[in-house]
Image 1 (tube, rainbow, N blue to C red):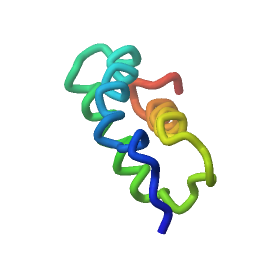
Image 2 (image 1 turned 45 degrees about the horizontal axis):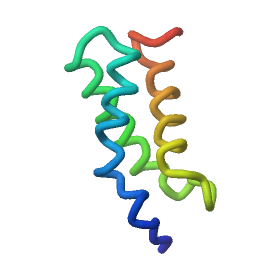
Image 3 (image 1 turned 90 degrees about the vertical axis):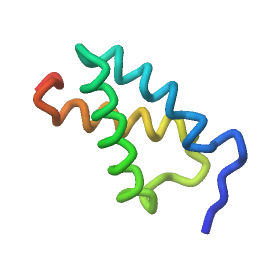
Length: 75
């Protein structure tokens, strides 16, 4: 099992994820739902994370994919 550096704690990244989501969506409830779906997908796909890939960049990539597939996204 890979252990991330302390600076890669998911809990520390949640505020930045919420901000990114809030910039994409019209209200805070929808933004929080996007963050929740992003974290759920990250848990499901953690084995696919590339070794050495920054956690924040990986989560942002997942968020954009989830957003693109949502009714609010650019689909």
